[in-house]
Length: 422
Image 1 (spheres, helix red, strand yellow):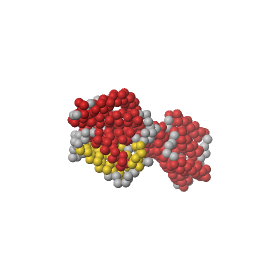
Image 2: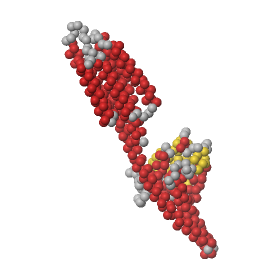
Image 3: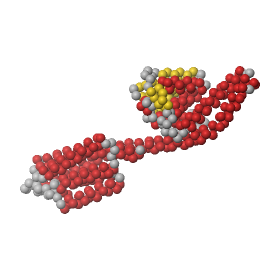
Image 4: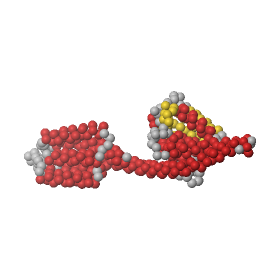
């Protein structure tokens, strides 16, 4: 993934080089016309135009190639810059070599390579630019000034030098600023990727711990289930309605614990889809809310399903647990009332959970979804929403939390339907 981010930034930088090459083509053509028409200096126009045609052809091919392909490697950027160095060398060869003030444009290529390329690639550009400049000091076609205008050479050289300096400065500021933004965006993406990797590693370690705990809890839960069954049949309990009601509640909660343990063991180590269940979105939500009401001590629960057209979906235990975590957090903050609202916005599934609790503190709100960020002030708090954020991210969605103006809090979960639809 990190390599993909590198190549994606390289693609943006390649597009910058293509734009710069078009500016170079326009600048070379303008300079040739001004020198020949304005100053009457003869140049080998046919040969220089051939170089320009080759450069234009290469740029068009580059544009077509990188318009379709989104990843650019360091080697491909190096090749593009070597073509620019070769083109500049050819044009300088036909226009005076090192006596041409535009020979200092080599510095532009070297600086761009230092910004864009790996260090070893930059030294290749330095070597080829130095060889090109050294060769031009020995081999080049001289500038032939009109008879009697030889004294103007020094003045033209100074003027060309000033123009070359301003051109170098302007292009460097403009393009290196844009390239710097590309590199900064790449670094930000890599930082996000690193943070995501750390969080996913944390999830894996939590999963291993939960799986081990689930195996250990299996035996005592089974023992408790047998004991409660025996109690129901004992005369001391069967003749007491209040005790029977208490035993029934204990069995319900015990069954919930066994379901949670079974879900952990089922999902541990399995990829999404291996434990998947086929259903429809309305049936899934109805069964989830009915199970939640039956197994939680909620006083008033509102379920507002605004989805008009039912669609087939597939879900696994992680997806179901993600929604239950949101509801459990809201129930703990507001045992008297909570609401689940579900709607569809084009291809997005939106679930909103509201409560009448105290809401999130201003210090915690910006960090919702990070591990151990909670207002409950007890060990292990904050992992529920951390789990929700990571599952949502895996599905291509996101979670947002906010405090309501009328009191309480709202947590919104947005998921692409394509992630769960059949």
